Length: 597
Image (cartoon, rainbow, N blue to C red; front, side, top):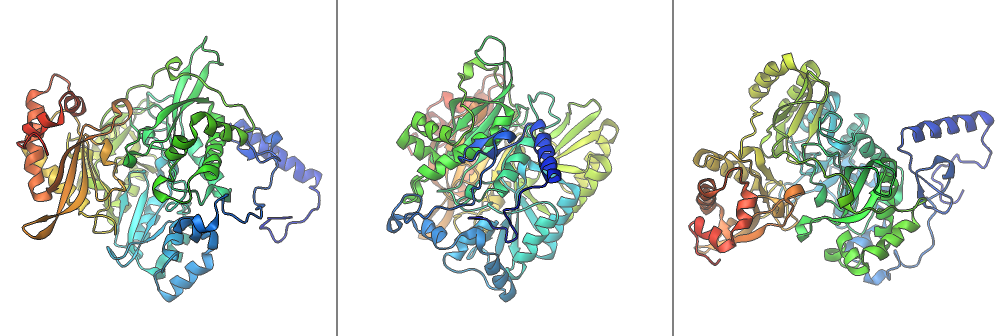
């Protein structure tokens, strides 16, 4: 069979028993509402009866996705020369020789979640995939063992609610990938031009206010990606989030696709029930908040639609200019209607549209609901949000949390986009014991207004692109503000070390972008400061407040700004509302700076 990767494939017909098995499997999958397959024409369908296509067949294009080869960006040239998914032998060779990759292989290794981060560290970082933010206790132990045996003895929770393990020598990389596979995790597509970790609220399945549990959708999409090679090697990275409508935000409007659960009542022109609104083109590092597309999909249509959007992006994305290769620039060029025509061509069902105003409003998100003790939808059970400072946990802490989840919870942990951890399913009579053991680990569950909202990327201790030590400076800054400014309203401070904005500085109440500036003839670490950003119900891009502030001068400036907010704010006034009510000049004066930068 053309394009088949199965050396044992034959053209022999299925037996009656095999047909019965396949029919039963398809019927069971469809009954769960999560089927996504392909029609003979290659369209994505949610109807098992209409499926049957071989997408492994590759056309004989002389160009690469229609682009003349000599016009391709360097990374596209690398992907064309050697498919990064097909380098297992190369990974083995580098591991056996204990040698890091060179040249284009540094990029190709990222398709397997492997980042060679020299010169920041002469070692690898592996980024895991944890779709839906769920980890079982055995998986947490496995990651702890991996970090202890091969890495630096710690792991970092990221802003896509997954984990990264650092300081891995080249000799370990194959063992690391095999270990992840053996514990039911993986890293394929966790870096480079691929669909990154699929995010969901960490309270999915037990949030009292959620509309629908989105974990099955995350799982279904993850397996769809793993089984369709054309979902890799996109023009640029791609982010997808599912929002259940719960109290804890997943920042769906910062994603290329954000599926937001909603309800539609009678009389709106569609069958009443649970649907998802579809947000498109969030990319906050480019100062874009996702917009309402007008699309409305049933839960069983989410995975097919996501696949169709990705395929349309694959066809239309700019492979010549990396700075203009994200989905938002495709829509800038084509327009929404023309792009959705391409999406429709990949679908086996008709797109449905409904104004967001005709859907029930999303229940309000609760700031810092990812911290502290909260009741679950099942009476008598609670989740405990644990403050993990800037997301870093030691292997010993991970082992202890795994044991804690088995002994006092449901045997699982959840990760958040705020770089924290949830311990779910704790009975009422076990909460006090759980809190005591969490404290013994050096963590807090208290939703402190400032410390609970710190978000920081890896920084220059582990990333070649970062200008500043974001994690260390985030903790120092947070402790200073905690000790000097008493706030009741939760605050988010995001520190990112470079313009790639992994910590999403544009949506923080206060966003800090790392830079190097010259002071007294020497380079010092500094930050550009932004204020008034937000997501969800507070969506908006932060405004520039100050440029190139050396870090050692920053704490007193922010102390004065926050003290002014505390003293002048109206009752129940959030910082973002306060900041947006004042022009930047007035805010600078509150902080003791000149009115103009």
